Image (tube, rainbow, N blue to C red; front, side, top):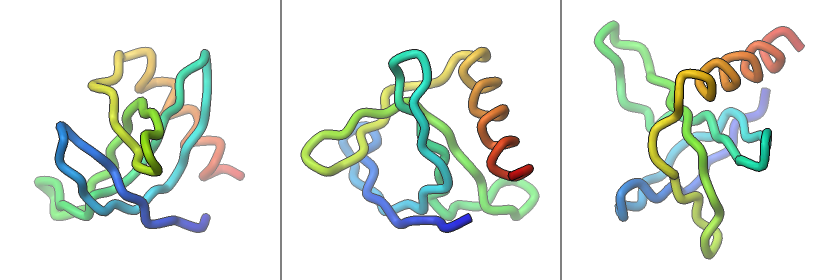
Length: 82
């Protein structure tokens, strides 16, 4: 899996991240990425969100529903299982 650096806008703040996966489902675009922050176990955290592109920047669109998280997990499983 090849990861790409990307620019993400979160609440008006621009940050550099590493993108693992993007996909579109049900007319929504989703991204799975890391901002390289560590979780409580000291592991790099993975984040997921819906997004739009605006002037070449990925703009995140709020929190995912439980169904959307399940969808993201399913897509990540496909990527990992090949």
